[in-house]
Image (cartoon, rainbow, N blue to C red):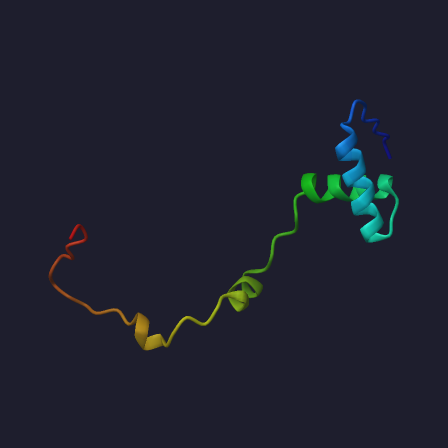
Length: 77
C-alpha cells in the first residue's frame, strides 16, 4: 500500500475531518481513507432486478396503456 501526505490543509477541514471521524468512532486517518475510497473508487453497479424493485409503484398497468392510432401525434401542442 502507498502512503499519502496532505500538506497545507485548512484548519476548518481538519476539524471537520476529526469531528466526522469521532462520529464514526475511528481515527482521522481512517476517516480520510474512507472518504477517499468513497469518492474515488467506482461503486459497484446494481443488478437491473434491484433497480427495478426499488422503483415506486406509480399506478395500474391500465394507466400506461398504449392506444394505436393511424394519426400522427401532435407533440407540439
